[in-house]
Amino acid sequence: MKIAEYYSHLNGLEYLLVHKKNLWDEIRQVVEDVDAEACRTKVSREKTMRGKLLYAPIEMNREFRNRFDDANWQSSRTSYWVTQDAQLIRKTMQMSPRDQKAEIETAGLRAIYSYNQTDFVKERIAVEVQFGKYFSVAFDLFVKHLAFFVGDVIDLGVEIVPMKELQEEMSSGVPYYEGELY
Image (cartoon, rainbow, N blue to C red; front, side, top):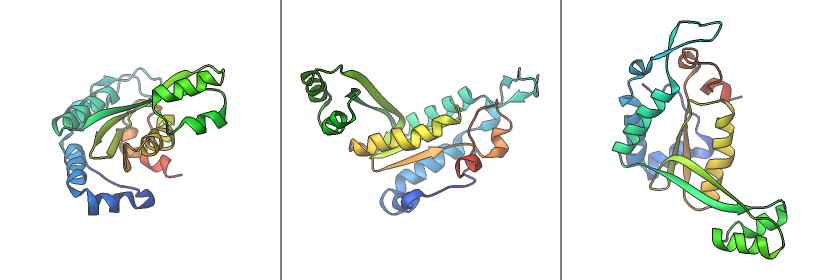
């Protein structure tokens, strides 16, 4: 595969090029090493493409996972407790999960366990590979990356999505770069 386009929000790419060039080089190499044609294994059952051989998102995700794993990138998970009181959640955000739970329960409210997980993290850079459903991109950008940033786990997040040209050769519902720019 290749990186056809990129959008650098708040100079994220420039940050990578100046401060973490080795990681940008690794990300580029992972993308280049993924053989998309080897992932064209899904036979469509959709009405408009019945019988057509499509790129399989599960296979593509597996290829990315294998290559990022080989480069020693790790999945990362941040856990926390929430409740229905927004003011209390804001008060507990910087606390440890154990202290969050205690603070919520001391206030007489139900503590609800929650977490966010990101695909790959290395040296405070997160990468999400998104060949799933279109709504997941917004969740990745506005929830996951932000939660890991606020939690002091990452400095920057990278989102990998297909271009429309590739997305048209996948099952419906997969996000694409051009659509995410809007």
